[in-house]
Amino acid sequence: MDYIVFLLIVLVASVLQTSSGFGFSILATPFLLLLFEPYEAIQINLVISFIISLLLFQKIKGDINQGVLKRMVIGSMPGLPIGIYVFLIIDIMYLKVIIGSLILFLTTLLLLSFRIRENNVRDYGVAGISGVLTTSVGMPGPPLLLYFSGTNTSKSAVRATTLAFYLFIYLISFFIQFVTVGTSQVVWTSIAMSIPVVLLGLVLGQFLFKRMSQRFFRWLSYALLLFTGIYILVEAFS
Image (cartoon, rainbow, N blue to C red):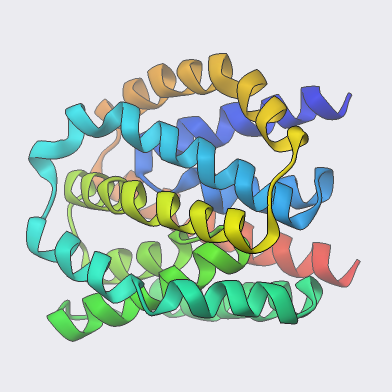
């Protein structure tokens, strides 16, 4: 039964990742933490998200904002070791409470029409936070989604730039996780089982992306953030 639930989570999250560039880590991680040990949930998320980004790269590479991508890669590097340190020393419940509260606070600002002017310094800063969240909880998406939603960046540029960024950050993050906490057979068995479902999610996600308006894309982003923030808090306190 747990594996059926796991495959359903992977399918829905793969569709969202393909159509928006964000959905997998934001939607899947809270649920994966209910089914697996924390390090297993994070590593499954990292590897599957990397596979999705790799398979989509040829389709999206023309829409990548190269300057933003370069700054994001550089900015994330200091955050990666900080994130694994946080993972090793802090109780996962407290980490969830902090992340869930921050997501809800910032999403509320976006719903109240708060907007952010994009600049180089903010690109580096947001990527640094994303790096911390990747190695600590496997969720680089929320700070990027909040930032790009606030700057009204086009959906094509958002999806392409974030997916390209994930190719770097997920690979490095998994290596750091592997070196510091190891891995398990459960991780690789689960990933192998999920591949056909991921491929189905890619097809469905591409279909959805072509039919999404910019307005729908923005509200989908808000809905994902609100859901994630609320779910993380509920799951932490329960």
